[in-house]
Image (spheres, rainbow, N blue to C red):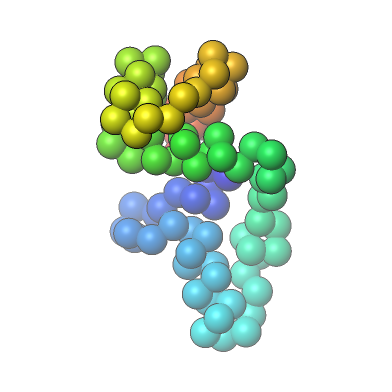
Length: 96
């Protein structure tokens, strides 16, 4: 997920968006799109929260989550909060 939704250094669009544009323009399905990661529908809201929160910060912390919840009115459970922090930790470990 991190790789597909990440960007290359010289690009402002995600790799996934680029692959989809290549498919649309040329009809050729890029390798990355053929092997596109799938996210269980039941967890997609966690990924969307993470993507939204991580846009404005270098590292997602519990303080960042609290600020996000205060500003948006979102109510994350302790389990959801921990998962979002762990997702960010994996992103940083993997260098994406």
